[in-house]
Image (cartoon, rainbow, N blue to C red; front, side, top):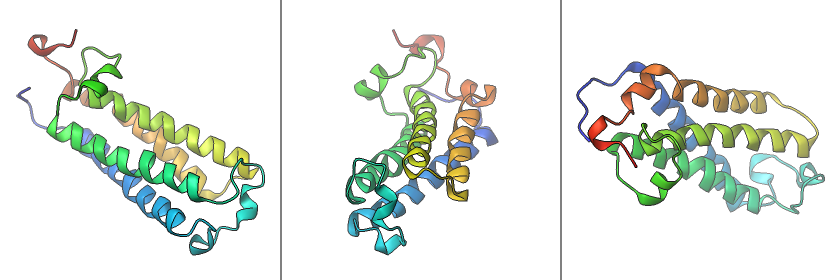
Length: 160
């Protein structure tokens, strides 16, 4: 798939937002995997009273993989545009490149993740507001017309 137009600034912003999410989640998730007690991040396990977890290991693994590695993989896919069958099957938007849909999905996932966190903690901290806003911002930038246009498939390569 050849690009005949320059990359809009909004696409660069999408890359930045996804990289910010990914790097932050790699750090936070990695710290929780290394120290599931939460001491490394100054998070007492008492925070998990309303959750099904006794320590931070499983949430750390989820954070590391889903919100750490996946956003970075999405950036790779948006830039390099590989044709991965599984990713294409997850894309209901037939006229848009498949990794574009993953960008939208990661925004939804981030919003759900933070919503579940605040429910389980029964409180809201500034970091929750920041990362909830990040999820919303990823979605908003993903659906901008300039971003959609950049990732649209031309008639000859439209998916069936």
